[in-house]
Image 1 (tube, helix red, strand yellow):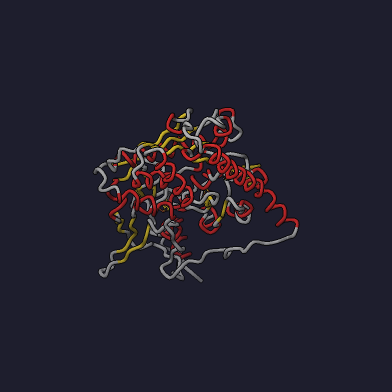
Image 2 (image 1 turned 90 degrees about the horizontal axis):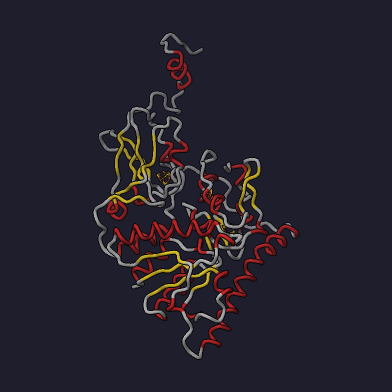
Length: 393
Ligand code: SF4
Ligand code: SF4
Ligand code: SF4
């Protein structure tokens, strides 16, 4: 798994016309004990990998597919070619041309089916791993009837790992759509649906346009390598974000709920009220704290990247932390930082809690040895040896 020293400065090698990296959002950069390695596990091309437990980034292998961005819980990696807004725009155009079916296909199958389909009725992507739930939920709001992700023979593709991500995204999206009473469903299929078959004489013109777009995309993927090689050769440094984020007055690091989560919840709320059920998806978690083990250090709130865990202190002195599942991105920073193993994440959340901002409170006891107490070491030693007769000099 990556650690802060191995990941910091390496991830930025991914920066290209296709991919933008925001290092300070990365769970591992925020907390060197974080165990997140989702981008490495999902990378379709071997661009992100490990060698002797050290992260290796090989930008020349990156195909700009955006699968790493799909799985990154904090949106530390963003796909740029196309952006989420551009992809949504292309999908809604296709939806209008097909009377409700959105067909998204990978470049492999589109290359194999050249001449057989109408380019105005299919959205091409480098890999199906590019598609994520906020896109599908937005399409549900726009009136789509079906989202079909068309794969080629992925098992024979060098980037086959993208298929697993696409299937997981469809499964999650379908759970959400069902819970929000939408009839839209997303599926992975091996065949181009009949609706995309070419059916008019303007095909040749559209085909030319389409292939010039695909060519641009291929050029852009190749540009990843070129960009990086040129920057290295010229010793050009990108603008670097501040190296370490600072703890604010409330004793926590800066928070940000990722854009995609905000858009996903906004699209779901437009669909109406969800059923009052618990759902289990890859996206949200519910923090459970075993208070008899908790030392009240509140480090979970300090490191939570989204503010899903926050501190509270009432006028009567009652204090503790609260957890808002709607802001949780299941990055596991809180479980990774807790030295007492007092905290774990349940995969099940109530759908209604995701939108209503409801937070669960955990009231805490004052710390036995708060770190700002000048006698902290004395008290810690007393606890350790179980004796009161210990004195400071
Ligand atoms: S864009 Fe695709 S190939 Fe490049 S690092 Fe991300 S997952 Fe790997
Ligand atoms: S998936 Fe995102 S948060 Fe996790 S290690 Fe990769 S960049 Fe960091
Ligand atoms: S509550 Fe835990 S798992 Fe959820 S976003 Fe915060 S640190 Fe990540």
